[in-house]
Amino acid sequence: MQTHFRANVSMVYIMTNNEAMNQVIAFFRDMNGMLTYMGSYPTYGRGTGTKEVSTATTNDGVDPLTSQGALTLSRDGRFLLAVNAGSHSVSSFMITNIGEPVLVDVKPSGGAQPNTVDVFGNLVYVANVGNAANHFTSNVTGFRMDHNGRLTPIPGSTRSLSTFKAQPAQLLFTRNGRKLLVTELTSNSLSVYDVNPNGTLTEPIVNPSYGKGPLGACFLSAGVLLVTEADSNALSSYFMNNNGTLRVISGSVMNGYKTACWVVTTKDERFAYVTNTLSGTISTYGIDHGALSVVRHITSTPGDTVPGLPMDVGVSKDGRHFYTLNGNQGTVSVFSIQRDGILVRMQVAAWTAFPYLGSQGLAIL
Image (cartoon, rainbow, N blue to C red; front, side):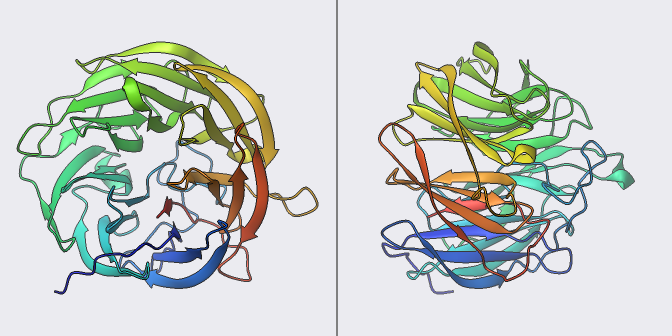
């Protein structure tokens, strides 16, 4: 297969999670951050539609995978990975020089209902929720990805979470790729694995989450970890020690809104943006050496329109724009980021004329 090296192109990708055929939706991103629909690309796997991956969360058609990282770009921007929770598989795409995702592989995820995936170098890990048939046995499973994006399962890489039915919400490599973090929504735990030289994992170091319902997470430089808490409606920060244990810096800083679920920081790490899905708002937190404070809030969509319920989030690599997927519409809200972290809404971009429930996952190139 011919290798397509991507050019200097800017894109935003979301995922439909459609139960008949999952698709990646591609938007071209212009120099001002505005989005134009490019096309839809089948994953050749199935999503869950509006169905939740377990009974742990309300089946309201929004956030069915209950996860951050359902759609993930490699750090060099050459590959895009998507989970197919309805067909228990993961799809890999190569990004062409015009930003188009070309499907190169679909592999079983090593479990049931994969809902979050991450990649570091040529190492890919996916977390599986499990399903009723296997009593919601959850795990993480690893793959090697070759230079064309094809996936090969790593023997002996499958590991359990803190318990056999601890529902994963996000799987995330540390910035140096030496450790792997999994937030566990239902067990209120944060499991940290060491990555072995052969790509397998150690048994997890299980840390208690400060608040309830840990969901989204992101790593800052200098070992600081941010974790949202969907049940506590809050954001917590931790320092990660070399042995995988976590020390709380700011515990459960509430913002006054419901279901704090996804988190991303500005490029300079001075601010974090948290989506409060059921409240339709985005909260800005100030970050001072890992200590958190609530600064301000904004609605995801204009006040005179049907409220968008923001979920997955991302910031452009140049740090100028913030994007969030509205799960009750299948739209993407576009904001410019001011120097003081203030968000200014610019656009609500749609790929279809009809509201679409069940979509999940967002990645920015």
